[in-house]
Image (cartoon, rainbow, N blue to C red; front, side):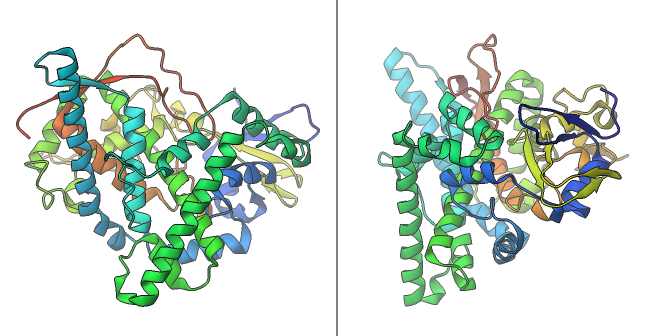
Length: 455
């Protein structure tokens, strides 16, 4: 639809609405005039019932304080210290998969080296463990016999249900007082899960503060220790930050991991190239020293695949901002109260920036090859501006967790595809993802993992 960068649309309310369709308009909303917009109250309050009012949902001066306090953890030199810990957990995941293959072989009385798995469950478990270790130094033990219940509690809260999706729409469209009395009354199990998560966050804060009070040198440099060290947050605020990071961090990383597996199943040639790259850089799964940040961050195909999947399948397919004052976009007047809708899934696929193959999985768009044949990752994927790719947003409200998300997916992908060949069990399965807060693949889609010897 030809347009000047903005599309106006109407709904059943009288509130003005806009869809942003150009990088130039995005720059104004997300960067130059970012302080003129906030997340709509109804949406913030709805998500806060799941995650609390942490960094993801805070606004104004509160957001600035929280973001500044967290930045010490998200520095590259600090995050890179997490690679050995996460690789050990990735090895644990591979062992669990191999045990699953053995158990399936016994049940079928076969000598096979392959098994079927729901990678949606696997990705949820590994990314939750990754987040637990890196943000609070706590192992959730998802691959052991008695895992922490926090994983199931998050699934109870975030798995899409018709009821939740109805309330999400109502939270954005109608005044909160109209829906508030019914939210949890109609779905009490989610209230129980919410309380359990709050209790978990408070327990983690209490335990870490007690330990650090006895021995300040016991700090492991994780996010919780960094926030405690700032000395500016109450225990309730610290618990909010933990639940926010666990929820937002694990769900987006888990979604990206499954989409990577799905796309590589559809392109076995690229999957084989990836396995060759992994095994060439990391001689053995057991070699934690070889799986260093230098190695994993310098692998062009591995990182290109992650970039391309994030472009095609952004974890948050759409988000909304509301003007808190009269402002403008591209010199068009924007009255206070206007809702501005931004759709990463559409903007990330605009042919004018990504070419005729904008809808296709083409990792090589992120790789440059010089005259000697050396391949290196480029930053834009061939697009003319970074605003052509807004999966993590831009400006002062861009996703602060982007670096840790990349680290998690790098470690998990390298471990899985270094060891296994991955296929879809049924190529005919319709693969339309349900969309709630984040976009994720169908939970019931099975993948077949086959051990590839020599690693």
